Amino acid sequence: MIDELPSDEDIQRFSDETGFCPQCGEEIYDDSDWCPKCDNPIQGAGTSHKHPLSSIMTKKVGVILLVILLLAFLWSPLRIFLGG
Image 1: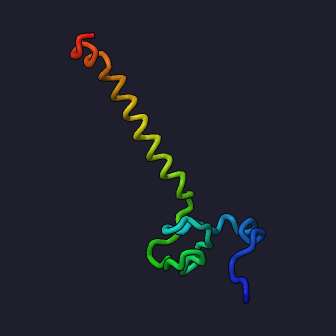
Image 2 (image 1 turned 120 degrees about the vertical axis):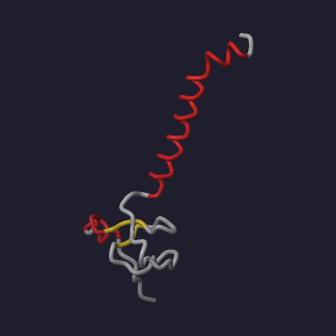
Image 3 (image 1 turned 30 degrees about the vertical axis):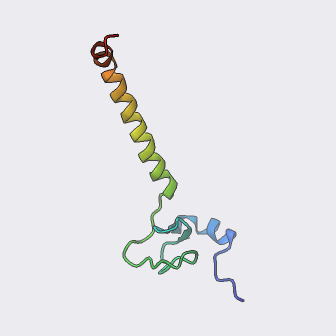
């Protein structure tokens, strides 16, 4: 069986020419037509150069900060309302 996947050396050498599959997050070449891991066609979507986990973590951190800010802003009125 022929191994058609890029080697680790190839990924390091062409690291500025790789992105991540929008479906599974596998690192693939920018000019790939399909993802070798999930067989997802890449046609119109293209690859993302941002790691998929970084965008998920950014959203979660943003929501957590928003909740903390709302609680801090509303803490004094809540204490008065609750009779504390």
